[in-house]
Length: 299
Image 1 (cartoon, rainbow, N blue to C red):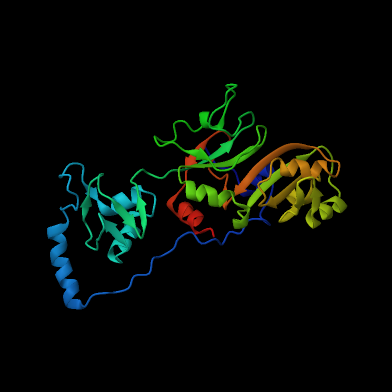
Image 2: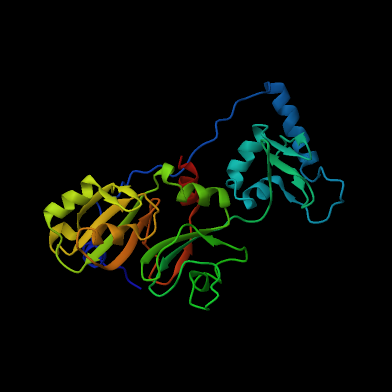
């Protein structure tokens, strides 16, 4: 399938370039300090070959895997970065600090990163471009279509949606089995960026844009968006781009309804720096390693 020009894409989805910061860091490095002399380093190299096929478990030699892979499969970091953690002396196996690269462990071993015990289950991150007509829930007693139907073949692990989108709201929805990250991404204090393309029932006046930008008092509190502007340079004043970090229920629809507008279409085009690029409506993809690294850097 051929990709259209960037101009065509802006025409179809709206130009939200004023909202998106393209210069985002995607990787981080673990600083490593040298704790050994040159002579000690040579001794370690000699011993690595001897210990690379050993394990620190008492449960025999079945199902052994390299420690760096175990750490990577737990979703902590990549194998290369896991080697740096091992070399830095922050990984324990069965209570013992391990610094020898190539060490192997079994599923019954207790592996710790600092004081945190980690499990080998692969951590998954799946990005869906949600279509209309699906509710954001894992199960539905009325047997309506749920977003889980769309990602059921994404992975063997059980994943969950991060936050929610209304039944008729379309756009980006992230799934993961990383509960700690999911909690971080949905908590307002972390100010995770969400950008929506909004289509209204009538043209939005500049006065009302200013009203929304200044903030509106709703029944459940004061709401102020992070940014708002006409889409596509104001060619169609019924379409706007709006950025906010609030996770309140139906917040965008309620904002516009409070000043006399109805939202006809609502599409989330950016979530936590992720975009709809290469994700057609109703389809999903796994996040890339650098995208996962960026999400984990959110504070």
